[in-house]
Image (cartoon, rainbow, N blue to C red; front, side, top):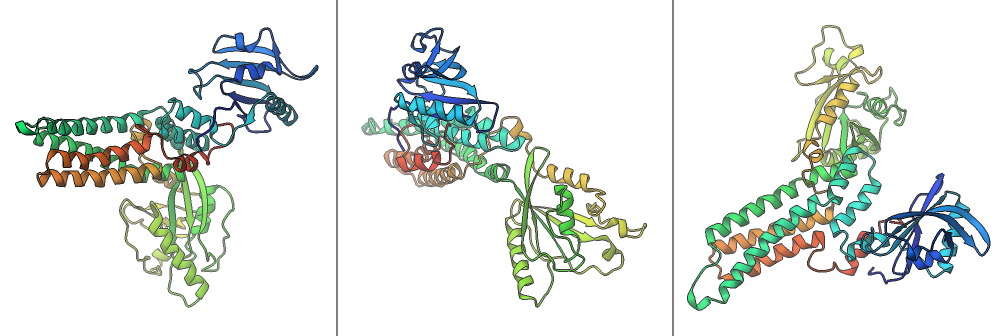
Amino acid sequence: MIPDHDTIVAPATAPGGALAIIRVSGADALSLCDRIFRGGRPLVQAAANTVHYGRILDGERVVDDVLVTVFRAPHSYTGEDSVEISCHGSSYIVSETLRLLIAAGGRMAQPGEYTIRAYLNGKLDLSQAEAVADLIASSTRAAHTLATNQMRGGYSEELEGLRDQLLNLSSLLELELDFSEEDVEFADRQALRETMERIGAEIGRLCSSFSLGNAIKEGVAVAIVGAPNVGKSTLLNRLLNEERAMVSEIAGTTRDVIEERVNIGGVLFRFLDTAGIRATGDRLEQMGIERTMESIRRAQIIIRLLDAQSMADGMAGPDPEFELGPGQRMLTVVNKLDAAPAKFQLPEGAIGISAKRGDGVDELREALRGAVDTEGLYHGDPVVSNSRHYEALTAARESLARALAGLDEGLPADLLSEEIRPVIRHLGEITGRGAIAPDEVLSNIFSKFCIGK
């Protein structure tokens, strides 16, 4: 998807608003706009970062009164000469302005073409460019903060710092080759080990942050599990504040996993209302239970829902049998407190609720929000949320482990340097530093962008 140097045009705002912005970028952006814009002076004579009032004209016909902002290379989003036309949001006005710009010599931009030009012109690195799409898609405070931190470059700075340290190590090892006959070591092997281990720990920390970053970006998966008719669907409806799941007194009503999303305290949660777990001969119900177990395996948080009335009567069945996986959290929640005797005692650490009346649900929301630690994120700590980055970091960690093993084996300087080089390459793949990313990688990344960005 390496673009050419045409001057590109596209709307930068969604249709339907009172105002719209049309972006023009490329070497001929100013002169192209002058062919359809009339203001106090030609745009080609305008200073950078200035706003001009005028009209869009189709011959002598006035299309709209507009404000035009001028940006000159390299001080623009794309690094090219750019113009932003602010017009009224009428779909007719936007389409007519685009038609006139194309007739004047521009062409419609492809999805993500503005941002890929910014990347190719050194305005953004590859990880920052990807964060632009995440920022546009963000729907919660946590997702917005995650994308903003990455777009501002804090994440890139840490990666580039690690890469620079590794380049320095490799350079010192290769320098020894020039003095091989003198048997000198420019890279002290103990210091080399300590530096490599420190870098490995940093890469490991970034890898470990992916579970949080991916959960914030995609939504924290929460499985609501329990026996049939314990109130799982009622609880889901209460958490959503609307009737989305079917509720019935008949046990086994939920046959499939129902997924709904809700924002709690600035974090997106994906609630999975699962089929009740019990022994059954019903083939369809058993299929639902199997899907429930799969939901449990992929959930970050499990709400184990119990029935207070059945517990008080000694009629509660055995708890569903499952083991928590790495990084999973479980909240024990006792439902139907409104129907339990006054002397009923909650199990230690459990949260008591009445999903039907809403009692205790706010406390459950607080517990869910507290189970997701975003404190470091809001203080700017780098958090990995992109699977491409995670794969590159994992590959870098594995390559570094091989380099450390080579150090233990006493590899000569040239071979040891060769073991370090893949680590440098994998880290560089994230930011795109050192070489332009392959065309197919760019196409995959920027095809997800909207037109106008």
